[in-house]
Length: 68
Image 1 (cartoon, one colour):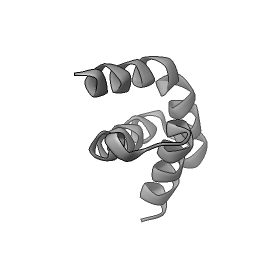
Image 2 (cartoon, one colour):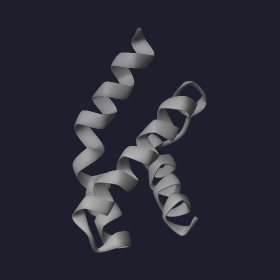
Image 3 (cartoon, helix red, strand yellow):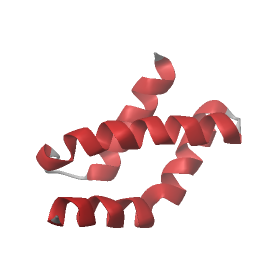
């Protein structure tokens, strides 16, 4: 349960900044929202073992997803 709550709090606090990063990559708000959703789904799967800065992890997933 704590994992669910910590992830939800992370999304509430950081999603706006992460969306701006996704927009800078895509230059399209709709595609940026899709890209962010993809990154958050992948982050949720790895949430229990992300130890350092989770925002940096999600940003890296954004970039990798955009490039693939």
